[in-house]
Length: 606
Image 1 (cartoon, helix red, strand yellow):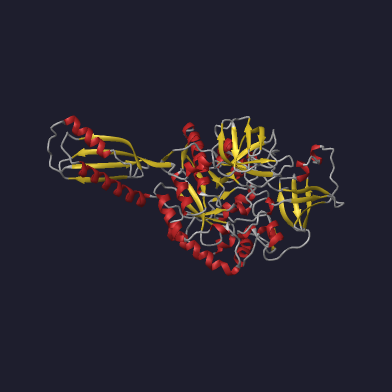
Image 2 (cartoon, one colour; image 1 turned 45 degrees about the vertical axis):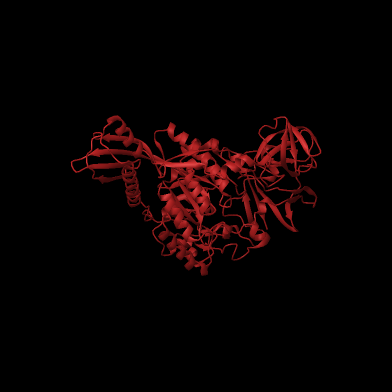
């Protein structure tokens, strides 16, 4: 049986709890320090509370300890890892291999996507070095993932939803080069979302003030079966900076899809316990969406570029039929639009502008103020659905574990037995005088009714067996009996829950695929250098964050090629020619573009 894991983000305790309640098999969350989202740290007490809640459903909590570390930070990182073990964390997501040289608790290690896990040799090395899972590079295609699966036995995790890095993960130094904010240190300034100018070799501006490196958001909901067939077993939602509405909505969306796939394939199973029922219809377009791309999973996606805006546009509602000062009509009608909705549109000059709905009047949408630049034919999007968000603000899911109950008569009295869907059992005994019921049928119905009341627990009734003669029982006594059983069963579940431990690295020397490491290996401390030397490194250059390598160094490598999207790709026989060298420029800082056409890559260099 292959267990599939839905992995959701947790900005904080509230988001993590919501993710579990909405069907996540695991959540990933930042601790007090050294998470790749520096602004999404959490105290260890909150992480312990989250782990306690998750473990009720045999779901897991992963701590992101995935920045590169400096020498004077290793002791603190080791202390955080120890605190995570004590808090009940199930694994560490790491980038810095220096951690493997420290005396860590026996937590399984997951190789962050920041380690650039993009080929079979790299992944095989990490498996031999002691990692239990790798988070794959986002830009891999299905055939590339299959090759990794065929060459390794390690668990494979892939992003399926949310924002994407335009560059290869862990290989981006553009933010550090622009303003000293290192992506590998958790402080990325997201320069890929900034407006840039594109200049040719003569200094002519080819593209002005456009978001040349900005892409749409990842959405691989239509490719889950393909990912499963390629060997992926963990499906990750991006969003440790997103709010609780996003977490609820997107987690519920993918939970529904995975449940459908599991129901159709007997060899697949959910990685945690319980089934989830939602009080809303999840729709990822309604909680922060820049549009959708599968990002190279099936080859190049010509629609993934978003040069006009890096902001969320949400769902398309229709095109403007007519408009006037403070109102417009849509070809799709106004029935689905509500007061408080946030709408947006692009002007004829491709500038994104927002609108707020006051009311609808027949087919008209009435706005808070006139929308300058709105014209007939313009497409209107909704990036804030007031009714949907109001629904999400309440309780929107119920997650329950199936429970089989049996009430039996014994020589000593009575016993209530319970067996949950994981096979965990409990029983409580009940000594009571056997007083025959005056109305046998009514007595058995009352017994069944009282024992079936599981609403306040994490369980739902799967079956109830009554093996007793009809006796008179007080409702209060039966309710207490049921509550006592639930308490014992939850205690037994805690005791029976397996805790995965880090396994010893497989036999055989784990040798690096290459012996010479440049700054892209992100070696920023002595322990990391020692690790790589032990595994075959002959030369090691310091990380970009320690020593700027100077002119000519790569600050980004990406499959997103500006020559191609602008119709000047020589591989495709394009007639258009852009006079090189090409440069991108923002805020007075200029970077040169280099093109590796054989590998179909674009490089940004100092």
